Length: 457
Image 1 (cartoon, rainbow, N blue to C red):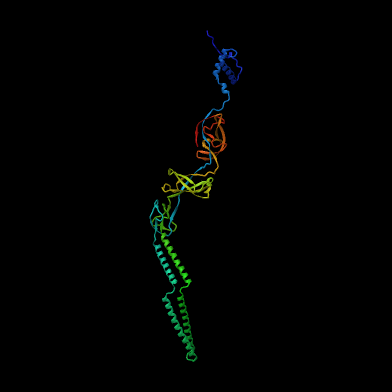
Image 2: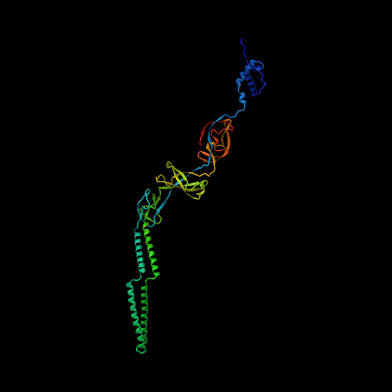
């Protein structure tokens, strides 16, 4: 009869009551039995039972109790890059016409014709509307007639007295001399007769008066003759010139008013609004049409105060429009307005764009990306996924080599500017360092790494 092997608690003693100590003690004895094949100090049956009990409770207790680090973690990495980088600024703007005006009436009058309508394309100088011009035409003819009369008078004064007039004045002078001589003789004879008591005193006085009158007429005719020979004085010619110039100016004003009765396009563009109809009475300054240019437009963009000093006149801007998908327009910064708009502290800049194909219209929303020039400072950038937030701070994981095994090194960093999917960082990081971009959330310092992928920025 075969012997039965039994293992009961009464057959064993437990010198070590602590569970962990018990496992370490009997685990070591069991491993010795398996290695040598002989139980220490005899008691084969007891040792077989101990071996079975050790297998049942877990023979790896000693290995588990030995201190171990975290297991290797699979990660994806990328290279930190260095250099001077420019940051694209994304802002919105509004399309404006490069030239936009309200065409208004420049004279009072009845609106007789409207030759265009909203949406019509017009060219510079094209007639758009006509105000009744007859009153202005009559006023021009009157002003021109008065100007001609004053010009003729001026020409007459400049040419001097005509020979016919000089001859007539000379004849009048000769006649006055004859009359004066006759009056002089009559007065002398009257004096002689008065001495002889032939005539009275009254008759002598009468003869004296006729003599004085003849002398006065003679002086007048002499002066007239001298003036005829000398011609017009400089003062008279100057006054005539002034009157002629005033008449010419009045005629020019009348002509200008007549021309202003016709409303013309000042530049090429499109009629974007009509404010009146035929038959209306227009006053000076009353709007008739709105006219905008379309071949070229400009975009008004409000730039944040931070970037205003970095904007350079003449720099390029890439602009997209929701109304023109899959197309990017490139314009140039032409103006910087040095006054912030309201409380936003944003400064307007103007960007000119070609619109020869007519895709853009005033009021459209523009999405602008401006490349701001860098300041010449070298920066280190990493993918944004490399940053791991730790409360108010950030860290990243740099890959270090330890005896040929890549391990994790935790670096505190401070983020700077963002460049799309990349970010500028400040800290103990150098260009060329490899950083973890995936699988970096739970890594611990010194943890082994398995590099499964390498990404380029």
